[in-house]
Picture 1 (tube, rainbow, N blue to C red):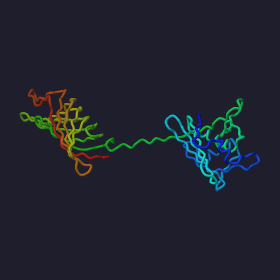
Picture 2: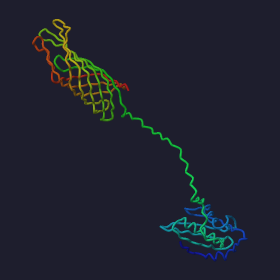
Picture 3: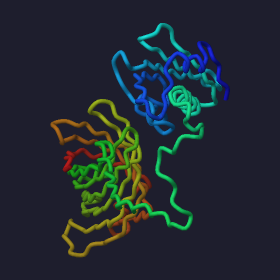
Picture 4: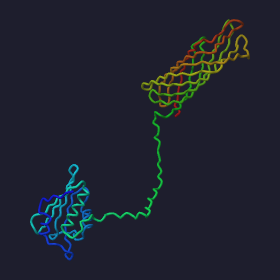
Length: 329
């Protein structure tokens, strides 16, 4: 650290102002500090740590001391100006150091030596408490109280919620004798854009009567269906859903003419199916549905009247359904 005198030297200050011995009253200073690392109160503590011959004061008898510390690059410069209202001119001292703290300590020493030349030039007394003895055990820090953090899961948006739908429909099979019937269904759907994830379970009963050469037989289908719809294309209230599934159940046949018979033939039914479903939403939670489905019959039995084939299950069974659907929640 180096000191640069830009005004009257320190000796000039001591010659201009009366020397202060141990018996004289302390010198009163009016302090004005402009620095990032210290202020008036902190600088007074630094000075009084070196000497008690300087105290704060105001009025004509008090000397004006202006302190300014500025940083420029890697160096810090401090300037102290001492002025007396009783005498013209001022004394200026400048000190350079590596940090603002170093310069502030050096300027406090300048002030102490200026008004108390007998003060020791040692480092100022520490401003904080002294360290405990080596053998003394440090006081453990108190254990902070446990904290509890509550995390609230965000509520799902409307697009993330599952909807439950139910409905009823009439069904027509586009095969010989046009079997006609009705069914019910329930559906769970999570609809978010094209991502639909709709699952439907249904039950359908179809029936028709076949007549050959004055003989008639009655046929009934009892089918349970399971379908999944992975996609939805929507425009306004109209949406189209391609679906795939399976139909499983039984086909029953019984003779009704010329003489009704209590005996019925019962055969299993199993068919994978593809469905295209159109839905028109209206009246709040109510909608109209139109389905077109193709079932591929895996079990294909033939039915005959005394050697005359009356009916045979086709390979592909097209069906069309029209119904109402209601959103339950």
